[in-house]
Image 1 (tube, rainbow, N blue to C red):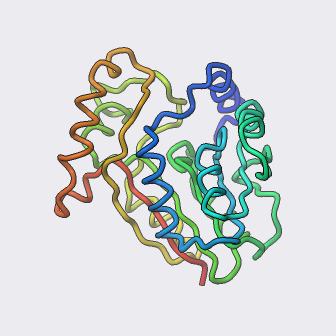
Image 2 (tube, rainbow, N blue to C red):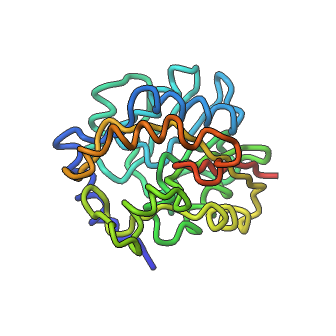
Image 3 (tube, rainbow, N blue to C red):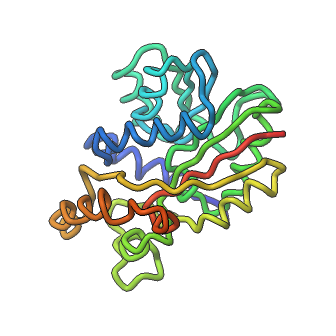
Length: 241
């Protein structure tokens, strides 16, 4: 199955018009970046591609940590927002299934809540492998389908599924499937589960009313280590040998 690129662009252009792309709290955004820096072993001065960067929320935080950032997205309107908000970052309109970079040319890659948008993530995974230098690392983060809240609210098979604020292809990921897809390219891959990623905004009016309850569960319920596979987000990360 192929992604309908124009449909994706139109969806995210609308988000740019209302500037509702920053869904996480500031605390959660920082936790995402701190986790990505640790897992991908990001160090000052390294070049990092932020795939699916949107308006550059995470790209900006990476830059603040001394990284040389390039943000890539399909939505020109979201990229325009990023350019207005931040200097010193290259924002490019590009398709993650055909990256405009040479083989073995990139230090690090971050996939910003991107994989769960792709009907065939293998196409992107192959590009990640292609452009990474030997010894280069990647990190991706996505909602975890094993988390009960993510499943009930965002999985197509759930009786409580809501399509508000998502594209037709969007679906929380199964960690082992994402891991297998990246491993199949030749990358060495692991998974890490993260809790405490609280939201400031959701599209559904019903869910908005329940958001404080969700955020409370997110902060406390999944903290024990034995609950880690059920945490709301999974980070898939690894290295090109």
